[in-house]
Structures are given as C-alpha cells and as structure tokens.
Image 1 (cartoon, rainbow, N blue to C red):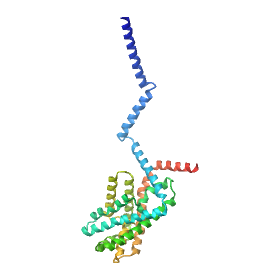
Image 2 (image 1 turned 45 degrees about the vertical axis):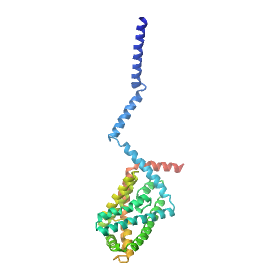
Image 3 (image 1 turned 90 degrees about the vertical axis):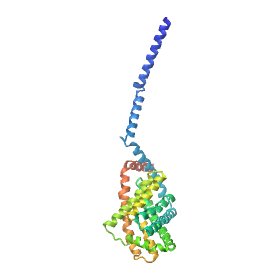
Image 4 (image 1 turned 45 degrees about the horizontal axis):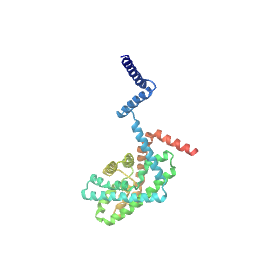
Length: 315
C-alpha cells in the first residue's frame, strides 16, 4: 500500500517535472528558439500576404546576377564573334520583314502584317543572334557594375550595328530578286520611314521604338519560360510594326529592299537621314527610359557589385 502510494506520488512528481521541462523549453533556454520560430512564422505569413518585399527583392537580385554574368560573356566576345552574331541577326530579322511585306501585300492590313513580322524576333530569340538594340540593357548593366569596360560596350554596339545592316542588306537583295511581285508593296511601306523628316512626332516614334525593343529584352530576361518569351516577342513585334514605330535597323532593312528594286522615289541619302535620327531616338528611348530605371531600381545591388569589383581589383 505504501509502495503504491509512493509509486503514485513519484509518478505525479515525474509528470510535474516533465511539464516544467516542457514549459521551460518554451519559456527558458529554449524560449529563444520557440520565440524565433514564432517570429519566423510571422515573417513568412507577412511575406505571403505581401506585407514585405523580401521575395521580390530576392528575385530581382537573382535576375540582376544572371544579367551581369551574361553581360560579361557577351562583352568578352572577339570581333569575329560579334560580327558573325550580328550578321546572323540581320538575316534573321530580314525574314520577319519579308513576312510583313507578304501579308501586307495580300491583305493591306497593318495589324495582321505586324503579327507576321513576329517571325523575325522569334528567329532572333531561338537562334540566339543579337540585334543592336538588344545591347541596351544587359551589357550596360554589366559596365555599370564595373564588370566590363566602356570600350568593350562600344565594340559590341558598333560591331553589332554594322553587321546587322550588312546581313539585312544582303538578304533583302535576295528577297527582291526572288519575289519581284512584292516590289510595289515594299516601296510603299518603306516610303513611310525613308521620307519621314525629323520632327517631334518622328523623334518620339524613335524613342518609343527603342523602348519597346529594350523592354522586350527585359521581359525575356525576367523569365526562363519559353512560352512567355514567345508571347513577349509577338507582343513587341505587334507594337513595333502595328504602331509603325521607328527602329533604326528593322526599318532600314525595309528601305534597303525598296532601294534594291531600283524604282524607289528615295535614295540612300534619304535613308541616312532617317537612320541617323532614329538611331539617336532608339538609344535615348532604350537607355534613358528603360535601362536607367532598371539601374535605379537595382541601385543597392549595383553598388555592392561595384564595391566587390573594386576590392578584388585592389587585392
């Protein structure tokens, strides 16, 4: 009987001690862990509810790192690689131009023809070739982060631009020889650009053209999903051609095609005027209205990259 009572008292005492230990684990030395867990859960709840911008910041930083890494590779190319990549891009985009002319000739509908033009940007993306205006975002971020030199950026821009024009000029010459029935439509479409004088309207069209193509680059850099990239390419093509925005390279190929016919009411001097101011507008629109805002948005990350590069340089 006494043993049973003692055993019962011992059992009760053990239960009390176990309860105390459990309480101590929550409030004592283990309290920090329990409290930390509560805080972690609270933070997670706030993140899921959008009360903090941590996850978004993480995604932006990861995207920034990917873009800088890609920019280093692109800016490290040799002249041969730059010219070859740019030449292929000129030929790729020329197929989009001829698709536009074909649909325009058959339907007379600018919006339908704009969708057909999407073949060009899709070929650029899938073939991993590079148009001049695609160098307005990623390479600039890389130079701003001091991972490359401005001279490398100038080399990429100049080589890509010249190669784009040469490749496009050649393919448009072949297109005119192969499809003489499209000459009239090609001339009429090209005249919209080649004969447009510099004005507030045309310069704004150039600004918007540069913005759209740089925005396309930004959208494609923001996702790894191929379907999303395709949609972005089609959307950008629709805006660029459907609204008849000015793009120094794309529109130049259309003008080249018209000039190859030998019947165009304008010449290379007219093209040069258009090309000059549209090029400036594209650069200002792409860099000033898209890339600059991206740099401002990633200011802290950019400063970290620059400090890291300066530290490694001193070491």
